[in-house]
Image (tube, rainbow, N blue to C red):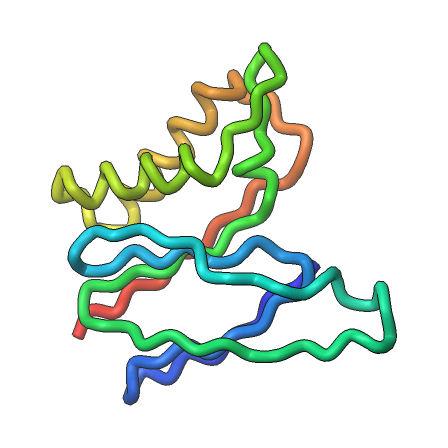
Length: 134
């Protein structure tokens, strides 16, 4: 899977395309948390696939989280997946509690995943956060 993006810091726009990868999470400065849409299969599965770009305007205080499926598919001992909804809840709660700095939000998320799956990972766990500060 793949995601690529172009962040124009001057205009505050993020243009991206995905190929089977998880869509980034966008948390607005006001605290709403939405998964950006994805629409394309993994790269190379079909030569006829046309990959299109999507754009998002980022306001001051907005954050984007890019992540691998190892986070949302992490399983607890009952084989329940962590889920995108739980990830959104944890990151949204960190924002509401005033923990908007990226280190704190990422620590809250990774700590919650570790408690969920008891530190037993079956897939890679990667997360990258970008915040627009002005």
